[in-house]
Length: 352
Image (cartoon, rainbow, N blue to C red; front, side, top):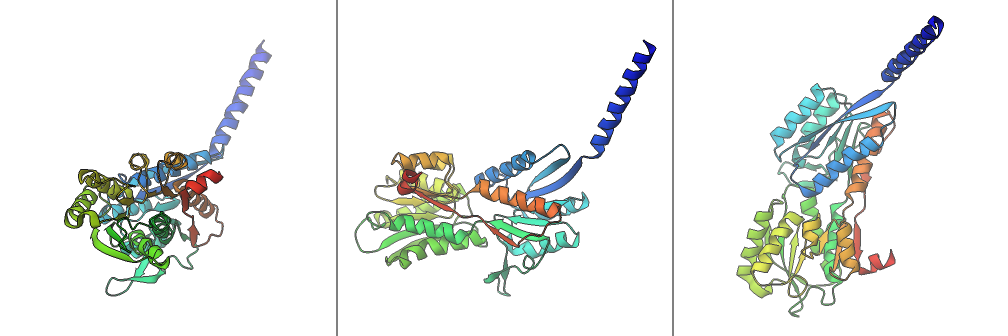
């Protein structure tokens, strides 16, 4: 009996030692993620997917500890978060910039600390002495083995917005006067996505040979209340002359939709409304939008929505995590990773 007890105790000690050894073999990587603003609907989907995808890739020997920070649309707040990440010794930082014009400060800070960096969603560009955006991307990304950008090309989303108008039976010219009269509600004028969506939505129409008329172009700074106010003002001033309302995001498009209903207009009948980052609440208003979810695809299939464009938050977040893991593993990376938008219309869903 004593021998049996001794054998049991010995086995328990071996198992205990194996357990301790196993615990020592687990590598935990610390990931710091700063999002420009948690209240942004699209970035909420994006950041949640980052966390869940990291967790799905964990193994018995590799774990990921995610610290998610809200930049609160405040550059000073985000700078402080980055400094904290550096102090905490993060193994990699994923950064969704509050201000793209301040990218050099944060990039240099992180690079000097020797921490790999993945920039997401808001592409930093170089600026000249007058603050005007240059064509080339910020040089702190180029040829830097520890820094990359993951995102979708906003020129494509803007182009798709314009093409969806051009593909309508009346090509957006509701009153038949030979031109498409539109109102533009812009996001942050410093943000490259806002700049490209503003430019390329209209360019798609002119490239297709259609005459356009800009009735009003105002900055709504991504805000729903501001979008409603600006659209209401434009409808009051220009009335039935407004045929298309372009919004750089769907928060502003939701506000514009309220203004349109209040003005007695009907989206899809006597006015068209286009947004970006269409979420469920936007879809339910039957917007022509960008960033479709499954509900939007179903509405297109049912003929209840003209079309939308998918901004793939899953594809982008997964690409960001994948390249972050490459950096953690010391693998070579590219400086840019692009995830395509997808135009979703009746022809698309019928082909699925």
